[in-house]
Image 1 (cartoon, rainbow over the protein chains, first blue to last red):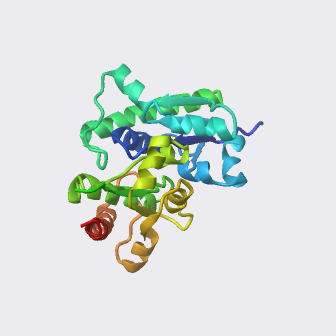
Image 2 (image 1 turned 90 degrees about the horizontal axis):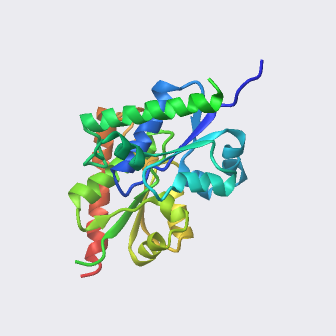
Image 3 (image 1 turned 135 degrees about the vertical axis):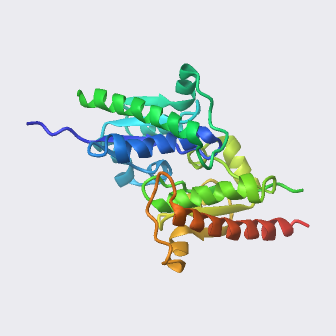
Length: 134
Length: 134
């Protein structure tokens, strides 16, 4: 039986707006609740500023980039130090597609914000299953 | 009023330290010292974004790091900024051993207490740094 590598979920965690908070919370939900046994993560600033060991993360794991906005920091970072991620999610685009408003607060998600984060986590989980061929 | 003091958290995603630093930062820039303090996306800064680099080079910066890897502090310096003050969440936890916390995605009661404590300290430092301009 071939052991499949865990999927790396790399979130932007952008501090500029609530989209970064949504990315971060959705990523955490995937790691803790939705796909805990098949996922790993790394702090994006550490991945970016790190040395060979940190940059190797994206070589050891197929990765999915979770970006809050169109600046695509996570996706570009993975591509810079490894190769294009196996998949990527742009929260801003998905919310528009779903007709969901970005949360008002970047510090604490309200009920609607948590619901949006769960919807995002499910989307990311589906993509992870696709990467793993499940 | 002069340029806002920049408060830059690491937003580490793996442990509670990053969550507390991030939450405290937003308490300062969005509530306690709104207008007097601001933040920016650390990942965007590390990616070399010119606007972010210019902001950091021009402002007084407060680094808020979760763990000893100091992603916020190191990247401020690498991007041409000067650290006017540095806070470490791990130190705060050592000072407050009675406030056990571990919830990363959504801060628990003790996590919120620690965030408020840290935010008060950062806010006082913002006042001190802003006062130097008078």
